[in-house]
Image 1 (cartoon, rainbow, N blue to C red):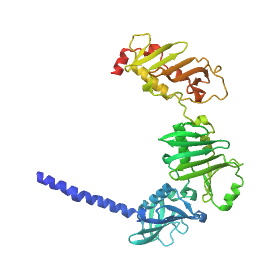
Image 2 (image 1 turned 90 degrees about the vertical axis):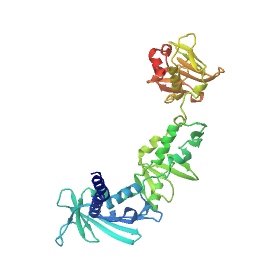
Image 3 (image 1 turned 180 degrees about the horizontal axis):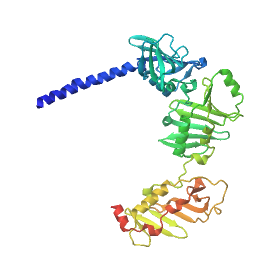
Image 4 (image 1 turned 180 degrees about the vertical axis):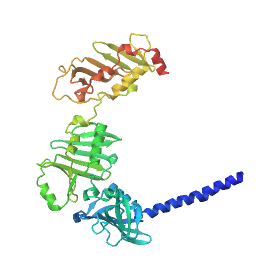
Length: 446
């Protein structure tokens, strides 16, 4: 019995199942309208009922697709991949045989005519596919393969995948950069210049004055440059010259260093309120979205690091908190925090989290109008937190003042000046009573 079962299993595994898979694969291949291999296709010609909409695509020797008619231009590789996939993946649901001569299928003026050239080890092959009128069955189209004059029905949805405008197929990416490889870049506004340099994986500002940069803001700007897309093209020399006569001072210029090359772009605004990007004389002039410049501000504060305190939490041995309602001093000895003047055990996690909060605290914005320390409630401050090291030297001081539109005036690093933080900052400062250890705290620490 075991031998019979073993033989049956072997028959199913080695013969029956493979035969079924081969049969299914053969049926799938038989349903294909185009038998070409996607990677071997070297030319695609697209013709529509509008003769001005004809497009030729050619694969270069380097393997990149380019538009060769009606203009010479780079392609959007994702669009080309989608087009190729649609062409090669086209399958019919029915083959129409014994057709009457001159039948009304729409092939005399096809909606789409696709010309293909394949080159492989067997040489060069050509094929032409005609997409005609709607078929007799719901949601179908007549399609004709000219090599053998076979007429089939395919799903109507394929028409959308094969209908492409010149703009759809063009490469709309303006700056050929990888933002992760940029090591330096300059942004020129009309009246100021910002220079950013990446050192030891940290962004620094070199101009207009040295400072640590806000990495989030810098990475956001680099993403915007990398993602900059054209919404229109000006190609001919005559049209570019005519347009550029209206350009005055650039709204913004950028120079990005990636490896040994520098990629440049200048952004101009016309009197009609349109925005254009110019990268070089050889490239088109690109029309871009008006919203692109909204991501860039001529404001040093925006680009600089906004942490109010810069310190190493492990170096902090004393913490003082002073405000009208609560004043206390914390000291650390042998890795244990204690509260001055009180022998009760305190929650060590609460102190650690408080220091982490202070380390991560950033200014949200600068006051819109100039304000004095006294007017901001910072002289004297309503709340003051000071951190000291083992030698009693201050390693950070945070002062909080009056409220303004849901925020609090704050002073941390001296060169930041008066800033604003969220009002919730005050709630993150533990009160003395919150520091004492309870039963729940003991379970948490375990």
